[in-house]
Length: 161
Image (cartoon, rainbow, N blue to C red; front, side, top):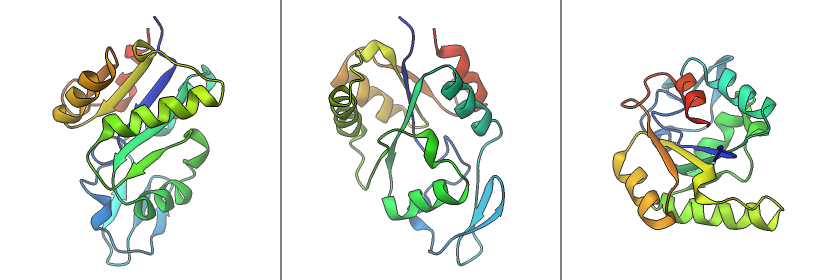
């Protein structure tokens, strides 16, 4: 069964920073892939992120976020880097229960007319415990560990079929 929804983590998955909730607002954009906080700390998208998001959009695959962060720290990065339009109902919450975030996302998508089965979902995260918890709670969700199973986000495209 083909993947119809790809859910990304943010920290160490879409960008190089380990914890954007530790940054100090406001941010400013340095270039197309980088923002800096008020202390000069940088957050840079990994190479290929935009390419992957655009490819998924072109193929009609839904894309969302499940991130353990403070939303007020994540959404400004999306805005400054022009990423907001790619994500449907992104879940950014300050707790580690990504299984609950993804279950809520699936419920909302079904209500929006996009019912999905777990095997149609691909979840990409850098922490194996998050991946395991999601599979245990939701069933046969496909999972990929960023930084281990893939070291380039563009490799996600190989997991779609």
